[in-house]
Length: 390
Image 1 (cartoon, rainbow, N blue to C red):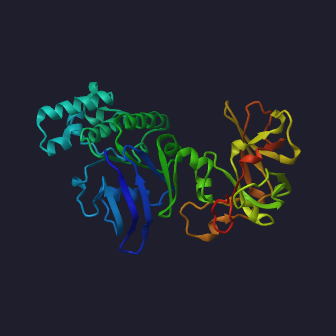
Image 2: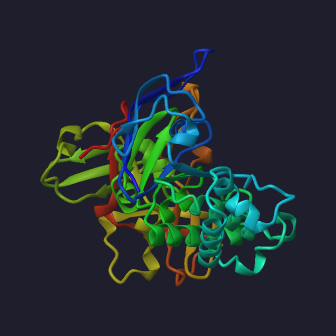
Image 3: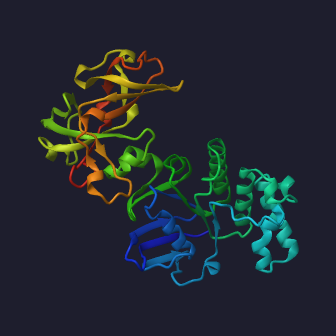
């Protein structure tokens, strides 16, 4: 096991495109860290630089306190699990798992022992004599994992290993991989574009956008305390509602005006939120922080907004309500350089927000609805910089 440290890592291609900008992340010994972000954000490039498959333009990459910028991939003592499994179709499962050991001239008895132990861990013992073509997608992914395990590396690198599986199998496999990593205790860097996958698997999650590190924190901290508007909009499904609002009142009795509604918020006793009173900000509210007033015993009229349900999705355990509001929505760009495609949208006719309400709600498509807001759960961001307001 080992620590992996990226210190101000930059990747600039010959055409001038910069894939990563001063990327600094420390992956602790035995930690499962997930790199997540939209397509083109630089996460796979970062992983390939750690693997030695991409040259580092500047910065320092260390594995177990050893600088490896110029070390060949085979000498970095890491194992990589690819998106497409990269199995040899003419070899048996046992031969695929043990192939790297054979190349390293490990004694046959030790190879057999390591392969057998990996197969037991991965429930592949009955498939050792089969070819990859005779296996299911989940079993092929286990074989790819087994090939990494038998090498007993200092770190695992995984590049979207579940993207080729169907939705149900992905859910099962992400639980298996997370459980296996914890059992083995091997330092792991995992890349995915799926934020649900990232949140359910990682000890910590690093969010990237356009090659910049937006935030690295535990999944719950990312969700509860996003440091900027990008993380707020990217993490969560359904995503956070982001809209223009104006802070008003005073520090002891503050309000936020969203469209035609003014909502009371808790007194401001710390941080710099009080500096924004009288100013326009980006207001964030998670869907679950609103509730149908019909299901609330004593709804507070100072913390209630009214709208009509444009679409109602009943999921059994909850109801997702899409509703209109005359507030300007804030659109978070996913690795988009065009400034016109992010920021405030002026199309109020199509401005739709989302609430996650109790299954006891009687709301129907097209019906009026009053939503009670948990005012303690508002998030506020600077409209110019996009950073969170404390």
